[in-house]
Image (cartoon, rainbow, N blue to C red):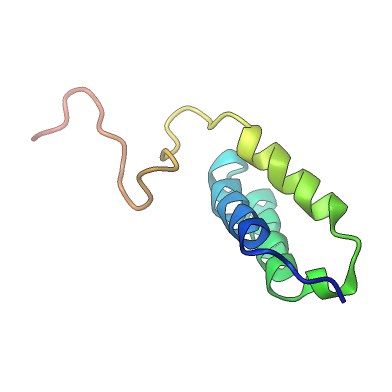
Length: 84
């Protein structure tokens, strides 16, 4: 059994949240669920290099136009012409 460091767990949680924005739809939801499941208990089986590489790739991917930035979860993007 391999212990996961707090930094690795945080890395996977950030990537899981971002996957919903970088990959809208069912692919993002699947990535989100798999990364959280790996963070919760999958790491105990070892061999997590693939999960960490996927997390790295998601965190490095640019957000699609109109996606919420990572620093503002739950906030909608303000567009020109929106009422203040």
